[in-house]
Length: 397
Ligand code: SF4
Image (cartoon, rainbow, N blue to C red; front, side):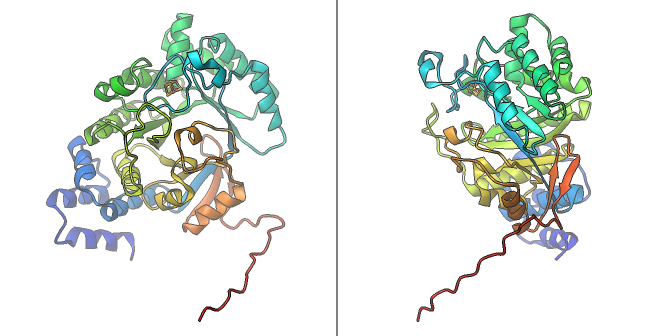
């Protein structure tokens, strides 16, 4: 059954609400859906319906192509001056002995360990502490670029930038320009959480506001640079807050075009101040990916973090709007495992990730940070590929 057959079945379905039929017509004709329609999708859209719509958009944009990136993470510290209620990763300053605080030399040593590895990106993000200020990060970025010029530096979120710029008394535009000059090449999507103050004030009161997060990305985009965006979902927010969040991202993207990828982040409830809140189901996770794909018509990519949602859900997500799986992480990020993610040791070889994508019927492509193709793995044969082992199973009568 091809895409148009699926839509015909959907549109002729006797049980589908007229409003949902109208949304399906809009998606089929490439039209943008409204805020109210976004909320309606969350309230009434069933998984199968959302999957058909999201997969249609995904395949129109990318066919079967599914991207991944070979990167590694450095988390300078797990101490933080802030105290976000959902954060399992930070430790309060008064419990400093439980945390780590890497020095400049520690981090440059970590970079050097990857000298012979075919990684294309270092992803740097962590807690916020006074010693990690503007001069520190500018020196770090420039020394990384001096050491390995082709390694793409993707680092820090508006949470850190707001803090260090304020401390240095520079405005956002000046600050972002100085970071770019020191070697920063793109910005990850973290720190967005939920923009709406009704929710943000309850879960992440002290750090940058939603507006400030958006302003910092806007300044970065004005420099011709790219960034990502996230949304932390599945805690105390309502559907209208998720749609409001995506609406603000869609609006900024219309203005700048600087976002590459949207990454929904599932709230995990281990060891944080919101542990009493149940986590979302896999069905809700897939519905959320699908609605993001439908709503954010001006974002090229929707990404799933396999380490956070499990390998199986990541495979399923490839039919619900996701076209990017992050990544061949080495065991270098503790952010998700400390929050109770599915994978406590999130390492996967390139070969495993390629197999995972192929098993889902998709076409694996290794990309660099800016989505240039590094290797097309569709017909690729891994050297010394071991033949699959077959074992004779006992016959049970
Ligand atoms: S989410 Fe980020 S800003 Fe908030 S406490 Fe954790 S590390 Fe700090």
